[in-house]
Image 1 (tube, rainbow, N blue to C red):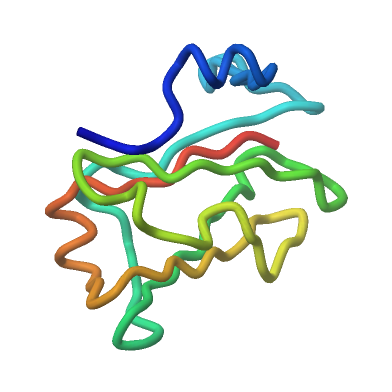
Image 2: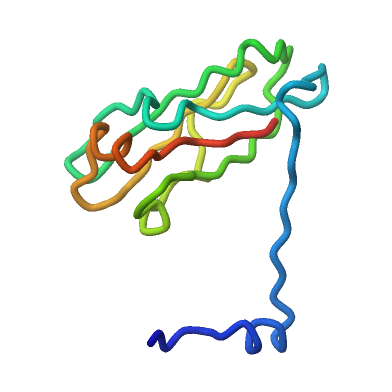
Length: 120
């Protein structure tokens, strides 16, 4: 039994979940979205407890750097990670993320089906 917050407590405190969606088959000049391949994302080692990923968004055709929003998805343990929404090397053609989780490797991340969703 968890000693965390119950749904009733969250509701009484006014907590909300907000989301945004975009159909990547309908990308256009002002909005674009995508995901990396489930189980085959090109993760790279950056430390013994971290992996990184460069996401290429050049197919969107942005002329200037857009605002990117990301989320990490998977079948296991992605909730224990940090870094999926902190972006680096942002420009009109993409961005990089650094994901921290104890002992994570690119192989393990793909076995857990970790992949990154993004919208710009």
